[in-house]
Length: 393
Image 1 (cartoon, rainbow, N blue to C red):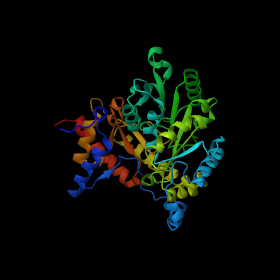
Image 2: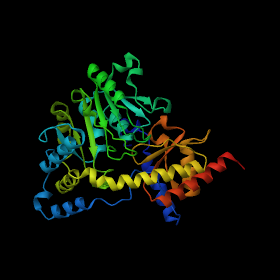
Image 3: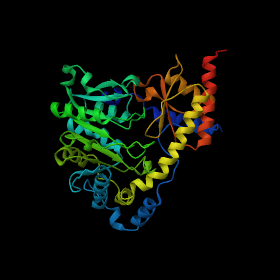
Image 4: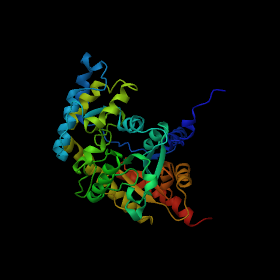
């Protein structure tokens, strides 16, 4: 019998994919499903992106192979954005790499830098692509629990030295998915310092950098002294510009750190569709302006969701960033069972915290991807399930 590789056997089921199957079944049954699962906003992509893509589709040159060099116009727009937003300068020629979405780049990164038997530090809970890339590269995942009492920070200094000696790569993601935590500058400074000293590469996953509230400004890792010597940062147009399906992102780093990932990608893909890169360039030059409307709407949705959760007796922390609310469950509730019950009884999709790792037990993630009235309706349905748990028949 033909069997899949042992590498695949080491990977758990992908929760988002499983929930999509259940959602389709409920919709086929005529149920009123409210989907707060995937971080896939209902806002349309910006008009400049649509216009640029439409024009580019009429240019035959835009349908040729992109290769890894991609469209210089996109790489230049990315470096202008980085300079304008964070005050950091990079060479668009060989310090910016277009990606088929940041998930692709993050998952490929361990293959470019990590050998079998090495260890990668992963936040737990964390974005599943970190685990997938680590396992498929034959490396060992070293899971660091994200706890409320430590502000959901990956504290490398707390790892035993003998374990830290094996670490070659650490995934950091602030503003964080799924917890919505943010990282203080002091934390970033000491983490960069430790990684420089130990020769550990930081993969700084930064797709929510523009989705911030209450005056908070999320940083780039390259604002931290020494980060150029040990970090690669990943940015994406997916969340900021409601372009999730367009699959466009970029990695940025010093050329000697970016080159291995670029070399690897020459063997795995032939680049991002040039017309999509053209659209990405159009939005990056107006990033802050174009993100403003979405941020304002997400803030309204956040506040309405927190108020509704308070009404049903589930206080949640107020996130300063992302499009998520990390919701603690009542004592004794398991995330997987709660999510399945909520979906089957009330037709509301949320992501169980354990879909991001065992460290997510006791939480579910709500994505602010539907209008305020639907969010309130969803929380009301959540409340019915919570009441049944608290008052068993």
